[in-house]
Image (cartoon, each protein chain N blue to C red):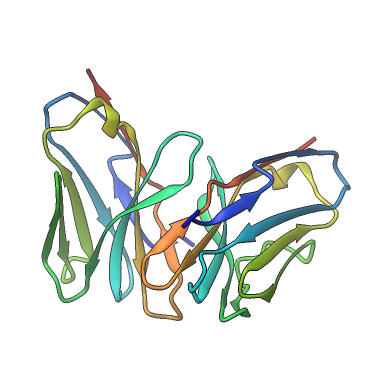
Length: 111
Length: 110
């Protein structure tokens, strides 16, 4: 069963704009992670935010976590065409280390 | 570090045949996961191991699916007999803290 639900399912923006993707989940978590997947490739870990953290930055990425609302957002600033990919959130509910993934947001950045 | 290595990258097989997918995790990672990805169902966790021991196989769809991890550096996922609905991309991932995914095996059962 899916734990994380991403919103929107698809997002198309122009290069230079910011992209915001949201994720909601259902149960208590230990941490929440964001992954990126280019077409036909494996998933690449982007960033991890722990349940006691509210915001985290990594380069052009900014992740927020609101455990009261069971939601997270991923912001990509100053997007580039190379950011075109699918982005997934995944939650670790501290039940043995497994991650449950959402359905993903397909981001298209047009040059 | 070569990362998580999966083989084969692509597999096309006829319905009813046995399929074996292979995974070499990153040395030192104590967790290994098998996921399946389809357009309809997204990423599904099939089974995972901790220190070579299967912890949760509740995601394995049917008895036709089995997975083993005979040692810390090797795992297999076997489907026998295979069916067209098994067609998907199968990912292996290993972790110590964060996950590292392999490039996947694209399985097509005709």
